[in-house]
Image (tube, rainbow, N blue to C red):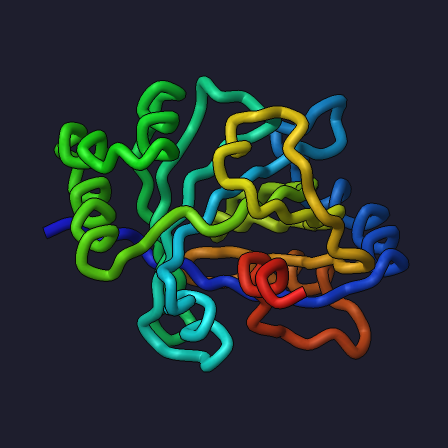
Length: 225
């Protein structure tokens, strides 16, 4: 039986002034992610799955423990690196599993050919295949945003600043570079992910007055606009 490694995940709503403050601190204690374009940020594009009854969305809004969501993801519109991911949460711990997809396999899935999942014979793909049948999961919406990411090796810490969040409902445009989207204005998110402990130097670097951890979901935010 497969078991994904769990990580702690803290999320905070922040504003642009907070972003500027964090940008002035983080480079002194953590390293910028090597995937950043021009030493700044990179684009994340995700395609989320849900059913006709919005099961995933409702479980998020209701705060159901043990919830999960499936998504396809690529970066900087690079279709040579596509991942199917399952993200789940148990209590305060988050788990993530992934499987590689080629562009051709992704196109088959977008075209409704579910057999591509069965043919891959990977546990995560077979799980999605089953749930697309008995839970009626289907590709629901696209979420695109820019991400600045910083790495701190002790504690396996990853700090991200997400902004310029956009959404689109034409799921067949997932592999199209200039996807038509609607902006989600004024939303900035700080995420801090770590394994067993959060080093004090990072805790201090990301400390912002009056900011508290929140259960933010980009998928939910873009579905309820």
